[in-house]
Amino acid sequence: MSRSEAMREDAMRKVQMYSFALVDTGLFLDTHPQNKAALMFYDQVRDEYAKAAADYEERFGPLTARNTDVSESWKWVCEPWPWEMED
Image 1 (cartoon, rainbow, N blue to C red):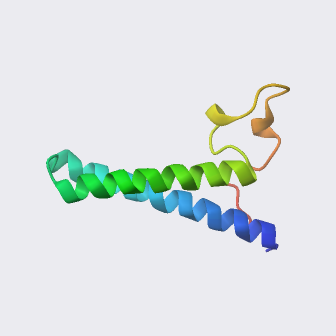
Image 2: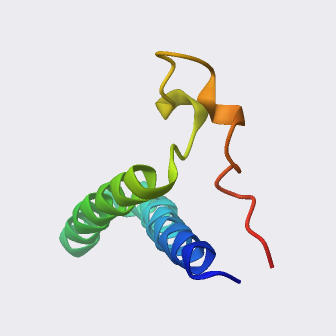
């Protein structure tokens, strides 16, 4: 694996980690909506997810088609998609 591939994989893992934490904490909050610690944790993780996603997109391209640049062409299909990681 090249250095750039390893960096891309690391950035994607960070996005996935925060995404999982958001979903998991959201499920907890569905049954504990007043839990202050969980609310604070969710808010912190949401910020970290936004940073990780912005970092990934700045370095490697959009995470979803909704964030792709369409000024010249449909660039979403020109690069490997975020989930296409080489082993």
